[in-house]
Length: 576
Image (cartoon, rainbow, N blue to C red; front, side, top):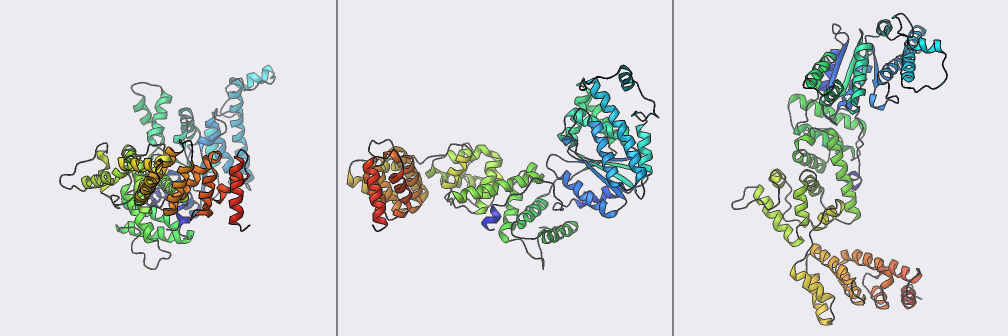
């Protein structure tokens, strides 16, 4: 996977492509809509948040439009402007879209206009009742506005359903009008009830189909709230919903194989595959799903481009590692992949090298087992390897190995999964992740390191040089921890000469540490001495320190002798 692929982010919008095998759900819904003896029909598409309901509506809309003889209307009560009259907004939106679909038919347009007028009069009554209209009205007009209307009156809603039924029955070359209601579970209880009432009381006429996409439990709870808190409100809410929705369809939870294929297709998008190529891969997955074959992205034959081995491996790792609730949720999977992309970018910018599979496993620990992640991050650096070794040994059932303290029992599967982390130096990444999450990271506070740092910053030249030799012999992660400790301790000194003399020499031997020295020098700029200027310009990596010398030579508040020394060193470097 290339860097550009790692940095790819996925949007949170419903998909127009079937990556999840939703054809098994869409097919029976299309057949139900085409069944003439169930009229009108209300279908509920149920799943928890992020489960793919809106994607199913997209796929269903595409199928119905391709079939012809259907008018498809999409509506989202959550986005209505008028929350005081959700029922009226729903009816008005259905009428508006019908009018747009039959713009050239004057008969349909006139009937739509007549029905919209009834909605308008209802809204006038609501506004008057709430005191929203403050203009002067004549008494006879007020009486007329509040007088119950006869069914035949064009200002009345009592005869609306009959008139609406005639409108729908007279639509030319139309088998069904399909109204798709999305995001109902995002609405407040009054809006949920108003939407369902609008469907049941005014729009449920022959040739009408309603497909309501929502979390069934949330809708049922909203109904119960609207009915009042009683011992029977839950049961009444269930019955109320059953009277409105004749055909409930629950979206299937993603199996591990489906999640793996879904992730693989998303990752393949980042590798330059075109929409047509992704569609071909999705169709291949669908065929293998119907045959009961796995992995779904296996046996790709002549399909091109094929997902990279790294993408397939990451997809399998993530599908295996995710917990059940996230595994069943396409939106959560996308969000995890986005977190993976962002963390990859941050690690790259901080020059923290970590293999994608290792990063994936560490993010799973962080996401699913936060307290255990915090335990690992807070463990002193020299002890992390021992902790990970014991952790994995316990997960693999090694004799005599027990679960480490403060490590969760539920991490068993995570610790046993590949790749193994025990032999890896994760210090730089763990410190980075801990800083991003505001979690305390363990510091290398061993007696040996403390002694070496003390000697490094001491007065004895021989002791300083001996400490430097021992420090540069440590592993890079331990050196970085020791350098950070040295810079924290050293900034407390009255004279910074020794601190920067030794740390500059140290960074010459371990170049990955030079950024820490430069960062500290920038923070302590106005306390730097002429000796530090000379040491920087005499360093093997002196080009790295030129920006600091430039600042010393030009910024205000710098000691005159230090500024002059910086200018002289810059001139000598430039050959003057």
